[in-house]
Length: 332
Image (cartoon, rainbow, N blue to C red):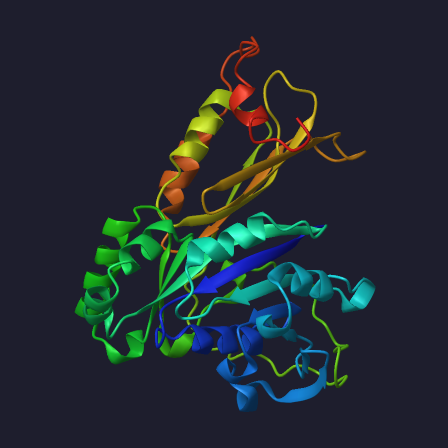
């Protein structure tokens, strides 16, 4: 299983460190690695640093933190993902500097030669209170929002509903399909970005149980499940992926295509689409079972679009129908 590497970006003061701290505190079932520009940017008191070793901070909740001052991103990713077994990380967050270019950070992750990692998406934090002022100072904010896989609208606890709606619409004008997620006090449901594994009782640093996250945290995470015992038409499904609706950040699960004996395991993150081809596990039902993850999803519309991808008729698709899928398949 590969480890997703998420790039967290935003201009100075946007609130990305608050979002990061919240993720670290609330993702109790996810063991995170964090790469930051310097430790001073992290809320050390909130994270309760328990020890230092080689520019790596071991945190109370089982997370790890590295500083880019002492090594390249590749070196730090290799260090963080070298752990195996119960100490293995589930995901890594790279916090970009407030003056860093997000595209450059994304390129570093995509170009990484570290085995066992994959790009987990670009998350851009936007200051909801100073949005217009920041756009005037930094016109490139529009480009950052446009390239984001998820847009986090911070400080919405300081805004009324009308202002949040206006800013959400502004972000959607710049990026028509990425989820725009309000984050009051930096609160973000980690399940939007990371897989939640089984509850962990053993921690890397102190061996103490992780406090349960706030049960009253309002979740802006949506999940839509689609299952079809009938195979999908590969051409129609490729068209669906190319034009998937606004708000869908991740799609994952096995897909059965008409005219193909193999199983295609789908993973999408933002605009990136990846299929892995292989045999169906022994005894596993040969069905398509997808989970679509995002924010503000229109579940009935998504399910209707996917239902239209089911192959109709008894004849298999033509030999070229799988070409769109194969272009995004590993090892082909």
